Image (cartoon, rainbow, N blue to C red):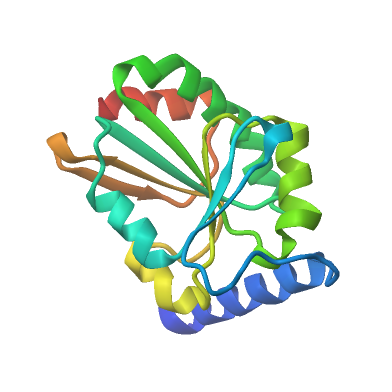
Length: 185
């Protein structure tokens, strides 16, 4: 039987190789010297912000919303793309109750112009959008959630007032996502 770390390393390596093979190499990357790059995706109706892991972790700690849902996804992940409309519907339904939906793309930053922005234009997402530029997943995955293998979609839900900080390494139906939100309020 393989050890947990061997399975996890194999999965992460597979993830990185698949991501590399699925993206094209001709694109314009944002300024790598900047910790945060805001790119106006006007056609999507919302800016997307590139963040590093430290900035994302700080966002977790300084949450002002009653409930925050962070969904980790990528444009090339079919289950991720399938559930994005559910997160959008929950954003609309629960925003007035203090629920904040943050969609965190794990697409390669170098694919921002070629893949991510055209995807956002087609999907017209209105939730807060972040593009994680954190380097080696082996370094930052445990910082997000020690139980996370790195598989996506993944969702982190935080409600500080109730002491909730749960990570779900799965895709959701609309009903499952709504139940999760209701239980977290």
